[in-house]
Length: 450
Image (cartoon, rainbow, N blue to C red):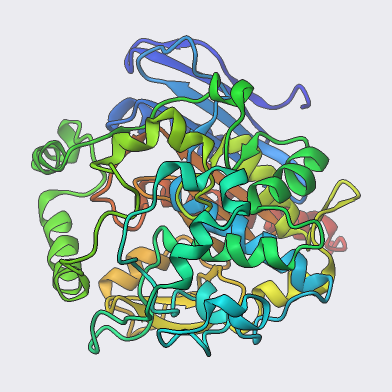
């Protein structure tokens, strides 16, 4: 990092905590926004990291309560941000010619047939259209350990599932919050020449070459560096939304905005809910369950990846530049192109318009005059990004055109911020900074008109 970067390292008494890190020239406003948000919002610990054109331009972290164990390299559960990692894993097989998104899952996994699943394609799974959003029985934690996965403990449960779409009105695209990663993992290990799990692939082919803190299934050393996640309760969120912003509202949306989002989403949740579906994992009673050591050791790629923002942002930088970073190729051109191809618009649960590619990452596009308020909230400030986000706050996305790799990782989960809009504020600010830098570069390179 050069000496012209803006540094953060002093104690901020107003927020009763410490903000650390640096921002590169042109990205100072991102640091100012981070400082403001950490001071005013209901945050605990958070990390923010951004790359632009292969260079780290934002590297910030903070502990509002001065947690001595939290730093830039602390590992945090990023929940569904891990879905983009499993997408990269399958794309690596496509890039090697070992897998096709048009192929039926049963072509590589014959026991997958039955219960209406015979013609489910790889793309169907990655677009959340497999009809397997929930299972008829809970999975034991032990079945999520890599050696038990390889013994088909989890695979045998998936094999006996019947395809089910919960509501005709909401369509085929139903959020496979946990199950997509389990299915993708079983498919990956059957196709991978070394028969690795996705967690083993990530460790060998992504984390090690790029030297990043990123894992699906933690080892003993990594377990010592994990920061617990903490839920901002429904009641606390609602109460906080009643306070005007000028008086220090600790959540992003006011009460009217929050209720508008809840009332929009609620009908689809009621239609899509399977009252007879057990919890995905046996013994799972709430979000704090994900702080369990045994849960952290297992592989649930769609909901239990652990990383720092530094780690995710570096992977996102690699993805923003076509699968390579600093001469290290993690995904070849064929796999990268295939991953981003054929975005198919459809409403998730009949509510939010998503554009999942065949490889399973969402494409965020500029808005149209006919976009709903919820679609605007989802896309506005993310135009041009690909990827996804995690329950309650984390964001892991990349912008190929502007070559931006972005990651926001908080430990405080705002579950009523359905679309992770508090993190989106940083994305929007980064886009503004990049636009200004590019304009300044064009002006500097223009011939002298005098």
